[in-house]
Every structure is written in structure tokens, then in C-alpha cells.
Image (cartoon, rainbow, N blue to C red; front, top):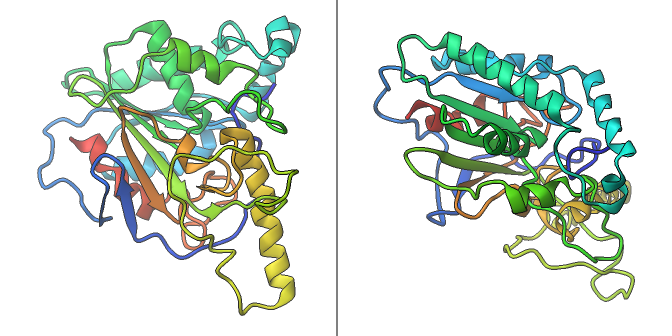
Length: 324
């Protein structure tokens, strides 16, 4: 059973280095080096929640980076083979109907979150006991399920990194809900995003590559919905002086990635992090931020040419949310 709204995709292409971030709350562009000018006396411990197919080790470097900022960090204990537990959903008739619920199929992951929360609380030294959740990919919406089911008042920040929060549009030809109803359940049953002193939602999306359609816009074979965000010209489409082989390879990557985006948001020619479209990684009511040039996964990433959300220079752009 696929747990995220997306399948794992190959690295796509490298675009210009990230320099700025966009915040949808203020529609402004600000410098990446805007760390807080004051330091909290006691920083909340953080809990990292792995994404689909990832394991605990994939986030150890991120945990070390956070430690360097003074943020004690626990990582939910997940191995790659653990994800095979999701196959239990195949025995549920709701899987085939596309109306699957997180429980009991995902109870194993929710238990791992609970264990990591207990570990993080032990890392707190005389603080208020509040924690920060850092959910990568599917870990972000699983955090929302955890908050709904366990009603934990200890979590004061949910920061999501490339999380496909929104379910795909229904009834669109060629679009299959890979979560088999899980994201529809989350949208309907989990608390709406807020940005308040008690619980702050911060949703971070990456713009690494723009997808493209397999067919042009005039083709009758292309049935898609338009995302409600403005999309700048594709980096791939802007390349006009490269040789034919390079252009063909780039175009293929964009089309391949675009088909992945389409399964998530219903449209192929949108920007995203190579796996999750920007429009799907944001939530109404949250503080929504987009970072340029950021790739989806720690697997296949490179801090210099293909940075992901947990690369040092990228962390610098969102760390302030954990320090205030």
C-alpha cells in the first residue's frame, strides 16, 4: 500500500541555487539569513518524523545540524522494512474502495511517534515540556493524525517539509489516489491548520523542478485541473541553446516528474520539489513558505548541487521557527 500521495521518483535536474524564500502569508521575498535576534532561554526539543520509505538513519545528519543550533532532537525509530506493514491495508475492503482510514493500518507508525515523543521529553532540561514536530513528506500528515488521535497538548509547533497535505482531485482521468483515501480522511477528520501561540503550523515546500505534460495544452488527451498558484516559466523550457540530447533528457525528466505531480494535485506543469508539488505542500491557515532549489528527499540529495530540506544551508532558512 502506498502511504504517501506520491511514489518515489528519480532525481530530476538541478536548477539555480536557492537564494530566497517566499512566504505566502505576506507575499514577500526575504533573505535566507533571517535568524531570530533573540535566543530562547530553553529551546523546545524536536521530534523528526520520517517520510515514506525513509528510515531513521536518513535523518541523523539533520539531527546533528539541529543539535548545533541547540535543539535537542529525537527521531522516530523507523526502518525501511517497517513500511511493508502497510500491506495490511490490502486486506481492508476500504483500500479497494479508496476510503481507507489511518487506523489500524498505521498504528505501528503512530506508536513510533509516541515513543519518540517520550524520548524527546527526556531531552528537555527544565523547560515547559512543549515539543516541536518536524514531519518530512508523509511524516507531516501522519503528525496531524497523531495530534488528532492522541490530542497531545505538548506539541506547540508542527513544521512540515515537502508534505503532500491535500488529497488529489476526484474524478480526474488518469489520476489515482495512491493513499487509497488516507489523505481524504486527514482533510475531513483532522484539525485544520492554525498559526497561533498555542500551536503553529509551518508548511515548507520546495521549488526544485517544474513538471510538464506528456501532451501539449491543445491535446485532447490531456485532462488536468489548474492549480490555484501562478507558475513561472519552467527551467527546462527556458533552455534553448543546449544540444538536442540534453534538451531531450531534460524534457523527459520534466514529463516524468510531471506525471508524479499530476497524481498528487491533478496537474503536471507545476513547480515542486521533484516529488511533491508546491501547491500540495501548503495548507490554508498555516504559515506557508516556499524555498527555491530544494529537493524532496535526503536519499539522492547533495548539499552542494541537490540540497534537500535538511541540508545545512536550507535548515538555516527555517530553523528560526524552532528557536522562537
